[in-house]
Length: 346
Image (cartoon, rainbow, N blue to C red):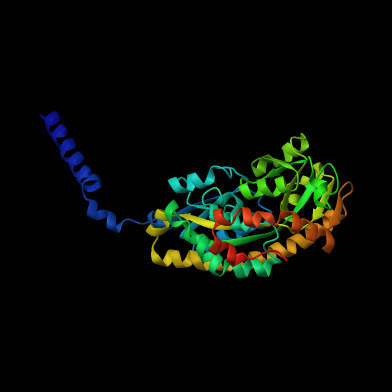
């Protein structure tokens, strides 16, 4: 008898314990909450993929932007930056953005020309006299028209980031006049304008992802390339190139893009926060890129084995005359209205 009483008492106590622990959800309101877990479900993660090194203008801008967003959002929004093509290459990052695999990229204008030919306008040789001319164009009608081409591609244009003007390098000979390019092969970004540019100079081209450029030049798969001073310095391209010409013949910039659906689903206050951080980062980058290029050019001049030539005005005019036919060649592709926004080189 005592055994049955004990068993019954055990069952009753077990049911009471289960009721107290497992079947009283309203008790949870009084339980302590870990402050670190508070609001986690509202945290926003943005994956930002790019293909250059962290110590380049774009790499530094991405890190600066991520810090600003963290501060302005009180850590509610996190920008996860993936540099050096860790996630996607320059050839695959745009499709990844469209699919939503990542939320943010900053491709070069040359890479954008594959998406829409209007972006070829930014690859026209000697189209811009200086950074001030670039800024005026991108803040004006040209910039508005270029951003307008993105609507059909499921992406949202958010800002233009500067790197700077491109210079020429070669392992074969100094590049002073157009004939110096003849019979050489140059690595380029995927832009048909750049193909035509080097064809006009009597050279051939090979389209190679940026992160493979050093190895390709080292293996003599190409003789030369064009790039900004910062990219030449940070990727140590000077180690596999003997000659550099300060030509400022073309401009390298980036457009900051978000996945369109992701952007539209963001709360309005987060959109404003991101816009503020982008505006501040863009202004910061303009100064940072200019000072970086000046410093790195001084350092490159001290490197043995690299001969640096600055185009004279007479040489510059030779390059312009050789390349000016590209303006007529691409007017129909780019559109006469966009071309009129740029004008002709002087």
